[in-house]
Image (tube, rainbow, N blue to C red):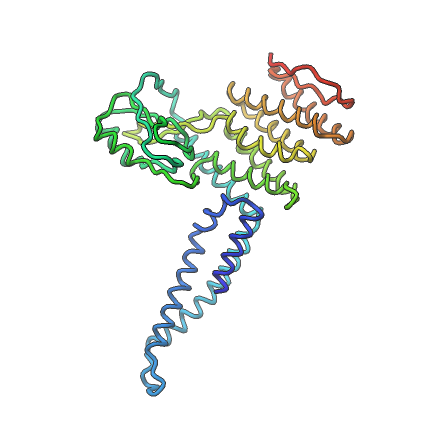
Length: 372
């Protein structure tokens, strides 16, 4: 009972201090599932052993069952120590953020390897479109089954939404370079897994959103932990830097090395809106959080982003500059923000696309920022 109580304490603590979206990852921890399963199995075995005992006949004690019961009891004691360590580690915010970061980075590296030999994405203009026939979040695609359908007809397909997108009935789901029959369309729809709850663990953007939600929770008045928020922002900056130059697509259903399935991922503009914007809005009262966000975007600019990514990063830098100008009141803090803006201007000097204006200490209206 104590072990199950520990699990509930961990889940309640994670939901209150971190984000409810991290709960599926904690619940699905295979080590904790195995330990609790051994506990339940051992408890059931002990009850069966007690049921076979006869107090009026001491010789009826099973000669093999008693040593097994002792062995299971000692194993449960050892596993209890492992369980306590695992649970105490799982409730630490630094460990959870590190796990989310490592998973997101691993997924991103796999995606980059898949896209290594892709020169361009096919133009789907005029392709036959198959709409969704049930609502829900797109959880995953059975690529093995879908790949057989595509190979059989020598088709190429493009999914119209990224994993984790919520679809309604009739929303465009997937397009093909050739039309499908009704039977084939039904078989294709069976390859998609929809769910009422959003959970896309194998998606780098979802991992980054989880990290961002933990950062937002950390800077809330109830938690008041800006250090955790800044660490989360720094990790997000590393992931944004690794995304530089990566096409906002992924591929699958390989047929002799040729991908037959393409599906979109969040572009940099939508990624920043989903990940950076909430931290910018809720952390605007803390100049250190704003400075960390500016440094995060500065780091993302170092690794040769493409034109679309560069424009999105510049837009977000403008938004951060305006947020700091509106919310930072202390002159010392404004000077610190100015220092980061000056370093950004030096970085832009190598590629002068955006002219950032420093924060005016007298809070005078500044001219409209322009892109040249």
